[in-house]
Image 1 (tube, rainbow, N blue to C red):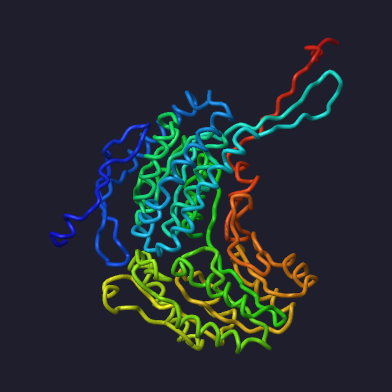
Image 2 (cartoon, one colour):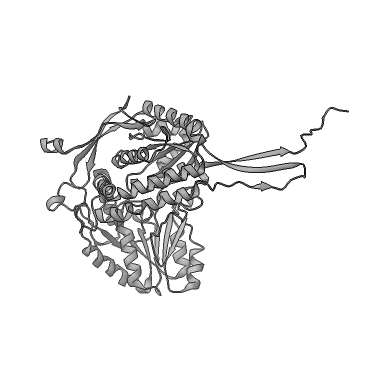
Length: 499
């Protein structure tokens, strides 16, 4: 590391446990790499298993102590205050996320600027965890209540760290849980800034804890197998989720998983092709292709197939790949060298499989981008759904365009994958829109739009894309248990041994 880099490093020497900024006891420091330069930009403290133990103890004490006495109305007030603080700092937070993850500042500003709406939405749910009264015999009064599940571990991804944190943190706090956040080692900075905002908002000590760290063998693994963590919410890869299930089996831990996708984006011949291409190209390359909801399998009805392929290639040539802090850049780098190499490897696989490369397919090495993790937006035509580039999640800006004939084949191809997170459909036939969307096996189907995600709309996957839902009225369910209470109004119980 050169002297200039040492001078400019941002330093985060503490982790946040029990309302205190403390040094890790079995961790150390790690460098956050700027994906645009390949150089460190921040030095961050990280914790290990012993630090997770400390954080879980703090979370349990808060859950059974002061937090248990906080009403839903008061939780709502704290969440609204957090949302207001978050909004006031949204421009700064967007810049940090851009630096930490490599997403363009124009994307980050639009995304992070809306996050306060989620906190306000979760605040609106905090005092509405209603139970039910169940009709029974006249001498019995039976009712249910919703109670918080307890201590939650949240393991966060690196592609959209602030948004996914918002979904997990807001829901857990609204439900009355306490939480230990473990941000991804590639993008730890914004989670520590969020801890400062929770502190400013006035959450009691131990309600929110933030421990950056590594996954396997480190903080992440301990959070999963810790016997006093009641639930884990994880966004990431399916292989990691399967390992988590095994590790959490002994304690019968609850899990919520969002595990990625290989989403079909279907363009029928009767669609407004120009608008469909706008959506399909945007959704193929957003976040430099590092999004679970990418429409990376573009299914096009044969009469307009050549038109769409030509439009994709032309659009790819117009995408400005550049430094993420430059507001004119459309697409930044991938988040790490590992992810860059994975994407380049899959581009090679696509070529080897016989797909036609019509745009991109190369690393960008010009000028200031020479040492960053940049790759051009890539388009393959002539793809069939059995190819690996059509079946496996690349997590890079690679679109595979697949031809089909008619509704039946489109639905068959769309569903012929292990994933089922999202899907898109473009058609001007209302009946077709209903017919096809009802048969697509995905948690969200967008018709004549794409990537419309809001705080009010449930989000999650079918099949191997996950368990449970985040957002909407369903968001609190994974963080609550149902208690049944039965009260006799007579207090009479027969003697089973009277005769």
